[in-house]
Image (cartoon, rainbow, N blue to C red):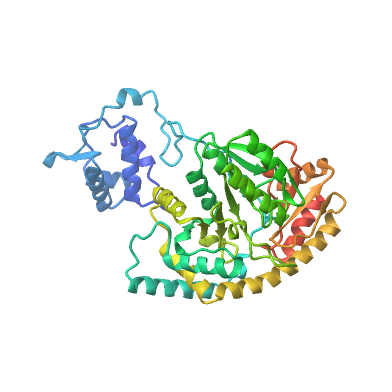
Length: 484
């Protein structure tokens, strides 16, 4: 007859589970040892006896015993059998106070840690994002070919080892060339540090610029994830005004005279979330203030290529490289899943950025970066951008028509000259509240209006992306919002 603890042990074995039987037995025995039901020095049944009790092959028990002996939970006592290791602490008395012990997978942490503020709800089936590209439009055969070329090239050149924390030299050179020829940013490979997307770029910039308590200027409406990074680095956030010409430079000057400002975070090309462009006169005034008050400009140029009615303004980094950390991304050019971004800065700053990279992951993903370099060098990126820009232009037009049909009673908007999203303004905030509260029930995800605000008096609105959805998908999403 089996002892009671053997009966309990047997109840923990599920032959229909995806977890191998020997691993279930290992977990079950460790569980009984941890809770104090199997004390140090306790003899276990023979492998044959336990196999019969569980109805499993004897080799399964032998494998479990051998693994537990190797880990130090059990010990072999020669011909006498297998025992619970005597080197383990006696947990019996304490364990009797806690007869119910959670499994490793569901256990609550019993140590202090920073809890997450909340992760996105996944209950929706339609996402009106903040301006993402449509990954379905990128030819996967081109990506596969580029990866194959990258693997072969890296193998020939012995670059399948740990590499430069600044990133693949091939990609850094390709990005530098792209920026010189297409955006007027005079850079070479030494000015470029590769990142895992623009969000990591903002994080690295904040890490090398800021110390706890340093003041950073942001616009009253801006990219919440960037503000979260700045706050995580201990920055004091100073919101300033924003209008149809971009950031209020008078407000910036007032902040600089009242505080020791270390940096300003901007999205001057297509301001996030409002899509307005920072006008040239304000750009020049802002850079003069940066020189006068010795602060850095973090310029996040997240969707430079997508413009529909006029040529884009040159980045601020094009005419003030000594004052600007220029953050960019290939996510919208290629695929968000590739996670490739970059920072352009003076070489000594890039060295500091690379040092921060080493603290995170030592280096980047050489093969992915080399594949992206191949796509740039062969012209595939430019061809893809020309193709999808035409598609996005049509989607933009259809999106505007649907908004006019469905939403003009409650929201106003301007058709953006570039970028991949619209900004909706609401005179009746009750209508906005109603839309936001009912959107989850309609199966639609939208970014919360308050997530863009850095001060209470900032105007609330919705940023709705049009590029990642087909015209039919976007129409259905707007219809659901309007019906809310």
